[in-house]
Each structure stands twice: as structure tokens, then as C-alpha cells.
Length: 438
Image 1: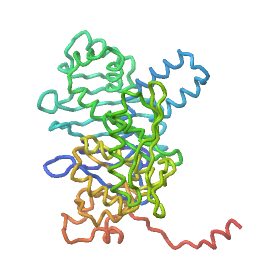
Image 2: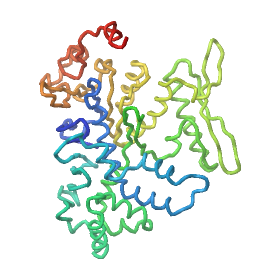
Image 3: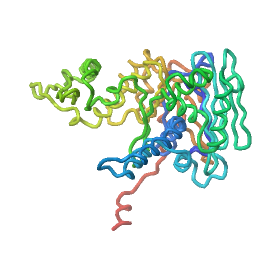
Image 4: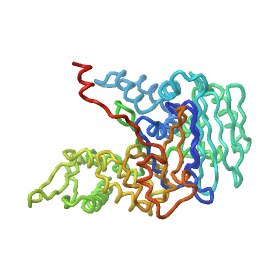
């Protein structure tokens, strides 16, 4: 779970540091972020996606190389490379898409985190073309220490990280070869994927893999402007990532039945007109093609409706449900604009119900101000504040009050602008606007 995020020259966030710790320096299980449109909520959420993508740069290189060497029957290689690149990014693409426009300084991402009871801190720093600094502080045994600190000029690695001196030499050679192009964690993850099962784990301290697995286990859904959404879901079951329709091996049918039971239970409680949910199956040799169907009460009759025909809000809820479950399972989850198309009261009910079950960390952005009138701890509610010089701050609303007050109406105070994060728009004359065009 995350305890701190520090960003410099990252998209629209030139200099931002956010404390995500609650009582006893433990990470808050829920972070709800408010702010006016365009202030940087999605960019803050995207920083976690960039962290995830930084782990995959070495994997991207190998995947593209493999496709380029193979013959793709009827599929242009350029198309395959484009599709892969849209989901995996190399270091140069990360910099191009994330570094603040016209910024002269380096782009910095720093994440404080806790795994179990062990605190850690991870730094990634980029110039205009390459990764120039990577540092990881975490516990090797019990106490936090520096595991490595790598710059373009120097590679400093804690000797206790390696359990095999020959492999340590081999890995350091890879670090020299790919310095600036790939992070240490990306190289190590690629090694793990390429070598035989257990080979790398036997030669490197498990502390590094604790960090890699925690970062890879994140579930992320981030808005990317007119390009739609990007992200990944770290689910243990493939079906949870393809709830509406898909194809599985017959050996996975039991998991599909479990997903059916889950959706039947959830939607029959969340919607008054949904009386059940089931999967329509078509068997093809050893495969099953499946499609989710809702049983809906319409004008007194129960009718079967394909889920893909449902409203934008229902489809969005289908998409984010597995993310919420990952938060319950103990993972870090980031959902940008959680409430898209979903009724305010339903969002309130879902969050209020899931809150007591979160064993991980759920970070969301939203415009649903009704959440400010629920029993959600106000210390978990953050707003973006922009000062007169356009400096940005992301603070919990209790920071403006000194402490939480049980009798305050935080929603009213937020809407009055006491915590920042609301649009300040002058009256707009639409007749005048049309006259300009006409």
C-alpha cells in the first residue's frame, strides 16, 4: 500500500507531494480525490500507471522482437507492434507522454509504500530521453536500508541482495548494457520471465520480488482524454477481467460458474429491475464461448437482455467491480472517475459497503459530492487546491479544519469553496458565443 507520492514535472503536476498515511503512519485504506476539471486528478491517478509501465519496458522489447522474428499469418507486423505498444510502453514513450511540456528539469516519481510491516521508498527520475536515476529503499531483513541506487554515472547495489556471486556479475552487466533504457526492476522481472521457474528467485533476495509483486499486483483504470482509458487489472482469475463475454477452456468452466454466481448476487441487490444474471454458453470442442445475460423485469415481464446492450453506467459498473474486489483481496487499486454514468446513491451505497471489507488500498477520483455526507472518514477525502500562482496541492479536507469535526457538513463547506477543488466560472452569455460564430 502507498504512504506517499511525490511528483515533479509529471504531466500537469509540476511539483506535488501527497501524504497518504493515516494513524500510526499506516496507509489509508481509502483515498477519495475531488477537484475541478483539468486540475490534475487523472494525472495523479496516471502516476501509478506509469510506475506499472516502468516495470514492463524490458518485456516490451522482447515481445516486439519475438513478433518481428515470427511470421504472422494474415496479420501485418506493424499492426501487431502498434497494438502491443498501446498496452506496453518503452522508456522513451513514457517520457514523451508524461514529462511536463517545456519543462527544463527532470521528471521525478517517488512512491512511499508499506508491504506487510516493512516501509519502502522507490524513486524514478528521467531526463528528456532516458532514465537517469533509480533508487529503492526497503528492508532486507527487518530494518529499512538502501537496496540499490543507480545513476548514469554509478551503480551502487547492496551486496546482500545477491545469493549467487556469478549471477550478481551477470545482472550487473545487464544493468550496464541497458542503463538509461530500463529500470533495475524491469530487467529483473524480464529475467524472471525468461529463465526457468525459480532460477532467479534462488539467486536474488526475496525483498526485491516482494516489491515487484506488489507493484505488479496493482489494478489501475485511468482516463486518458480523448484516447479513452488505460490500465491493467491484477486479477488472479482471467474471467474477472472479461466478465461480459469471452472464450475459455472447458477446464475453466467452474470459474465461469463462480463469476455467474458473483454477478447474480451483486446485480440483483444493486438494481431493482435485475432479477438475475447468467452466462449463455456455446461449447466448441474444448472451448466455451460465453456471454453475460441479465434477467430484467420490464413492464411486468422478466426478459433476458444481453449485458453488452446495457447502459453506459451498468457497463462501467461491470468493469470496475473486479477492481473493487481486488481492494477487498488486499491489493492497491486506482480508479479514475469511479462514478462515470452511475447514480450518486448507488455509488454511495457501493463505497459504504465495500469500505469495511477493504484489506488493500482504494484510490479513486470522483465528482460525486454526496460522498461528503456519508460516514466515510473525512481524513480519507482529498481536494486539489490551486493557489493564485497556480501551484497545486492535494490535501485531506481535515487539513483545512485542523481536525475532524463530527457535526460539520463537509459537503456544504466544499461547495462553498472552503477546501478548494471546485470550478469558479463567471456567467456565460451563450447568445454572445453564438454571435461570435454567426
